[in-house]
Image (cartoon, protein in one colour):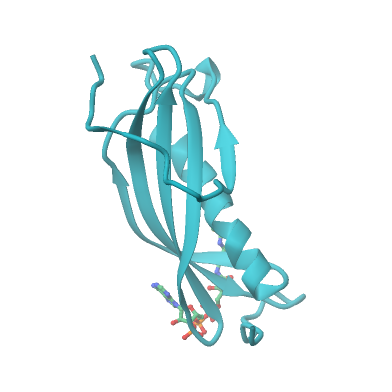
Length: 133
Ligand SMILES: CC(C)(COP(=O)(O)OP(=O)(O)OC[C@H]1O[C@@H](n2cnc3c(N)ncnc32)[C@H](O)[C@@H]1OP(=O)(O)O)[C@@H](O)C(=O)NCCC(=O)NCCS
């Protein structure tokens, strides 16, 4: 039915987030609403950014977003997030989302890929330098 190219979860990597969308997250056609997926991607991407910034960050840009395969209610979603660039105040993160179709023999499909940029901010919500490693 929704057989995209089947794959496996990335070897040796730990997802930032795992979540199962519920019927209340679906659009009028019964598939999961893109805006719900975008919110989860933003959360997942912010986690390595917050750790790297050692404090609060704000999302300044969604550079790219690809919904390659549909997400179904009941899928087990795994969000993998990797920092791909650190600037003066910004941190850019690539997020990949895999769905295990629990209700369809558990096949695994890569459903979404996105790149987002976060800015390290201070207590006044102004940009601050990303601290050195
Ligand atoms: C995040 C915020 C504090 C940054 O302040 P700003 O004055 O706009 O920041 P700057 O123009 O100095 O840019 C900060 C960094 O973002 C980068 N940046 C700016 N525009 C960008 C864009 N379109 N894409 C990617 N990176 C961008 C800059 O290159 C800079 O990075 P660097 O310091 O590593 O070189 C401010 O834009 C803000 O509050 N935005 C709202 C954030 C928010 O509420 N997000 C949730 C969704 S509404």
